[in-house]
Image 1: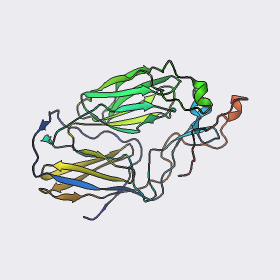
Image 2: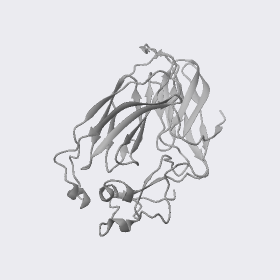
Image 3: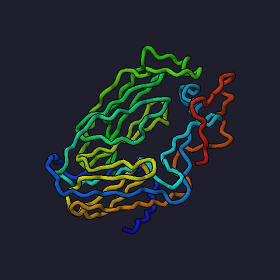
Image 4: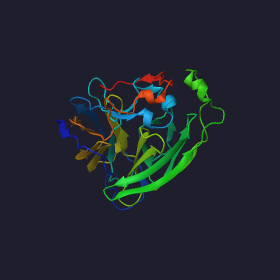
Length: 305
């Protein structure tokens, strides 16, 4: 099957249409097929988002991951040396029955002032866990979003561990037990919505996306861009492809006990993509911190990919 080359849409990706609400039935799939392939970005990797740490809380602690010049970066495009595109969701939305759907609530960690993982697959009408691994306050704000607008799913403070000491981490020490109280939050998507974004109310560069599914026929592309969905009932289906900067749809045919190859190539966008980018000569420079220094002792980020 020839690769299909796509032009990447710019701006904030909205949720895919979830259609009417329905349940999922687990049944044997004795002659199921497999959908597999690679997701690749064609062209130069876009520059990351950039945030001036001087203008935000906890500049020194959160600056343990930074450029060394006072900027914190967030890169939505995780691309390997061969163009493999990580964290792209591939989802066969139409299937209402098939293989077993085992779900364990995913855990999102606020660690070193970033949410990990960046992309999470969740099951609609089920839970997600969030935990603070930092000795600073985080306020988690979860929203569902679509072309119909945004709606708040949750907005709660994220407790810190009482045993965690900021001074130890600033000194570069390794602390084994960093977890605060684990918060469990329900994901209840509205009609025709299946996408939520979680942000920190204090640290604008902390961002995590969740894609809500109603069946187990999904995959999240690996570091090299590869993906596979197994035990798919034979038939012809629409396949949704999603990332915060990508929204596409394909039609595939799954044959009994066969393998269908779907290669996805996405043209890298050019020009300015975000409101937040690194800016030279800003009036809010490191001198505003006086004798306090921002040291990237965990990771020194680079602006160029």
